Image (cartoon, rainbow, N blue to C red; front, side):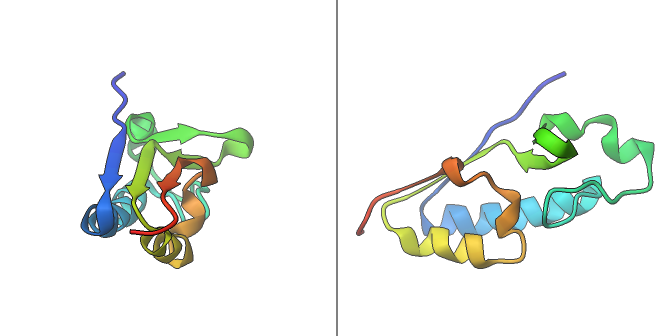
Length: 96
């Protein structure tokens, strides 16, 4: 089994990455909180390529989000899939 880590850098990279995780989550039946809500074994077959199964069966993206300022990270956290990411996967400076 291969595992992919997604590195999202800068405002554009994080905006595109955020949308990417919405699409991947939907394809694998993972809701915005990281809970599997799908109805097909096929959705779970390769879920560990993009997601790590955390405690309680919650799926979190294998992703690192990087930016020089916290504004973009705040937007991702406040977005519909903001709860999906681990807080320690956000790396940012205090100002751009």
